[in-house]
Length: 525
Image (cartoon, rainbow, N blue to C red):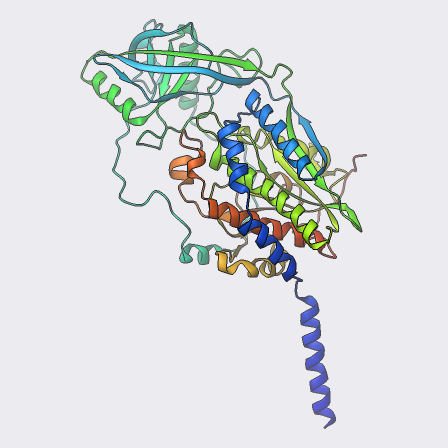
């Protein structure tokens, strides 16, 4: 009898311990968040302002400044505090396109689908010239074009053979793909490498080509992107004679990316020795004379743990040919909607966050995570010249940073960035959203966006797993990156889940566990 009683007590103690260890989920708060996120959403209203009204938002451009002013006012209207700009830089000069047109004038007329690369200079009105294909891959082969490029349009790329699409352009993650992600092992530490081992001949050719182009100064160079068809053009920034095209005083040739169908048409005619004549005009202005840029920061103050912070954000800047909808108006709209949902949840529940909630909208992401890296270096930490971590004033205070930057696709889970200690916590937080398709945790890293600035110094930084939809095939950095390709139900779901993660992170007794223990070498005042 005594033995049986002992076993019962042992079982009860075990169950009690297990229940104590289980991560807390506030079902009533989840219900409020779902109501405001799914049933009373304003995410598409916000997305339309970011894209239709304030797009595109090239870093350094006047339109980004206008979008920044609007976002600050919106956050203030929702009741956020400490709304301010976080200055970083110098970035260099901005660029704003005022007018562009391009035409084929012969052997027959047709309007050309093309876009100037960012930081391309203005032409002297409408200019006209013949097209020449620069058929060279060695320094020696360039010699035959010397003295022949001035006043010409120069094709840089070869013909790209197209294949008609038989598979759908828009795709969502399959159960098999999600299972593979969930079963992936922890990522291996990155090995730092020196300069890429390009053949000397390749470097010499690129240098010689640039020198020849800037010596002869053709009307423009024309390329076609490595992907895209049916009028979709993927285009980013121009290259300069030296340095970056955004550098103050940099010499930049007019540079154009053409739709592949129009590029191929011209290429085929030239191959048949049929002369082709083009005309075009670019009117553009260099802006942002002081070279400085700004992130947007705003907060909801916490209560008993107000000195600690939960951050959430996305990059606000975009490239120039579309309106920056899926990259990354979607992420910015979701994070602004997350901010609104959190404020509505506080009002309805009467419960305030324990930790301070801080939204960040970054700029300069497209040029290399510049805005978030600057913020982290100033406020959080950085590696010194010897590879030692120098901790900033917020290093110990930030529990987590959550990011969204892979298009319009709904959230399917979250990348743990190798931090297995958060898996049981995130599993509990994801469970209420199984019916929305969010189930997957993977130890794998994902790259290319602003959570890496935090993760790189040991602060928990996370990017959500998203369906690709047509992000990589159609909209990422393309002229088709517009509001029409945003999926309302996806963005509602993403904002709802993000708000729940931010809320529960703020209410925990402890901060989220960190995957590495890094010895402090210095503390910034």
